[in-house]
Length: 317
Image (tube, rainbow, N blue to C red):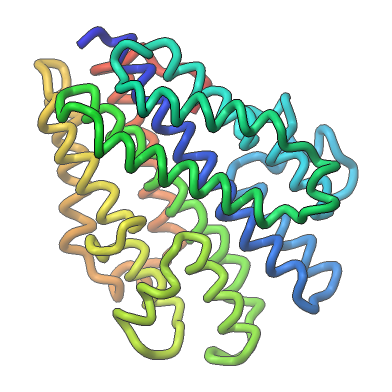
């Protein structure tokens, strides 16, 4: 496969996954902002949302104050924010258009239709309908895209690069959410098991569709260690780091070439460390420190994959 074709497929998947992840984070924070809380708590929550995406500095260059309306507009519509939902869906469509002949007609129509519909949404419209319906729509369109991809694409290298892009983006996002939210919630909650503690940790789980899974697996109080275990080490949890890296590694092995030996080794090493890891060891050494190292390894894989298979990495990531 031509490296440019693989590059477009990879980034098409990453941008679609990124749009969904942003919608998830914003939706949970928006719902939490409707609950009784101080202005300081609300500002901390929205600030954490920007830090998750690495956009706190970019936001403050455009806005003097931190409030929900400004953050939502910045993260959904801002044309100068490359990670706004609007720009992510536009970029997914542009990458799909560049390799339209490689995609099935169903996948192209799904991706193109999502972008065309996105252009109809405006901040003024949310004043009447509310923003939660929009977030549900973004998540649905991302689910639809993945379903059409799996259901219609030939299981060749094209599909493999789409899967690699999807799960590498998801791994990065899950690690970011857990790191920032853990630092925000742990010192601020009530005594473990209290009402505020429960709602805040459950909101974190809902942001990665893990609340119901947590209840099925643990059937008990929500605790930081168990949240970390579920989102890091459980390979049967769809958005966990263990699951994401299992998918990245298995697909990398299929598309491996003579240049990717070290990339494959590092991916396998990271996958194995998550598969055999113990949450007690992670918590003992410090969850934040562990996640910083893990994010560095995920980013390193992204650069290596670009250099081995794709167009050399650009600032898009």
